[in-house]
Length: 293
Image 1 (cartoon, rainbow, N blue to C red):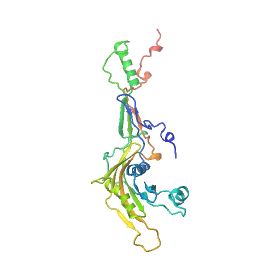
Image 2: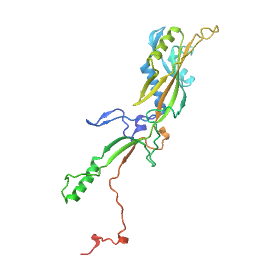
Image 3: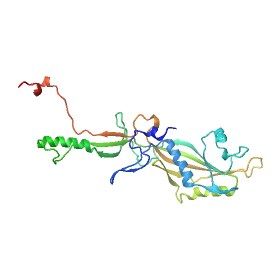
Image 4: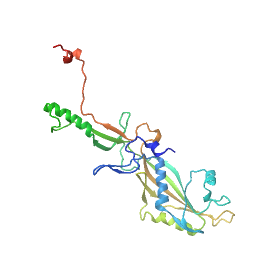
């Protein structure tokens, strides 16, 4: 995976942290939002915010959280601490998997309307910052001051030639990411201790919020918990309790990631003067520098 500098170098204002420039100006991180950003946010919420513990044969310990994408061979070779000497996965554990991703026009966030990109090579649709270019504005003001006052620079007058620097970004595209948490344990008490935080975390409502790299997404815990176990099975399989918790995340994407053809942040400056050149020969204009005295 590329480093932070390799991915975001040169795309202002992509900063690692917020920076207070002066009393009125603050630089705020604006990282791109991708599908991986939503995945990291839900896993961070599970690992840090929920932080589930339960009783085990070694005492009160944290339940390991596993993203189920790695191959089984990778888990067996590189994650041996989660398996015993016979290669059997140790319980309790919580696994998370993304089971679906859809774009629902009826389920969106704040930016409801579609705002197309500018019809040029830079693109951009939503204005996120607008500042005055002091040096360029002062240059136009000093020139006009000299012309109006005949050489008296820096005299006060109503300057209408103000150069603004405008920063725009693409409109967020909302998607609904569906995840499934699977709680596995060997004993009923462990399952009760693992399941209780997910039921009580949101109180009487079902929504919660997750964050990652400055982005904030809204999640919804479904109220139907799929409980299953092998207690009634008289076979030789291991004793196991399992509960599935479906979760929906209302996320958004900013651009198409590495396949995006437009810049992540577009910077433009407005025009304050329009000049039309003319052909002196056709219109018969005088050329003072060539006129003989």
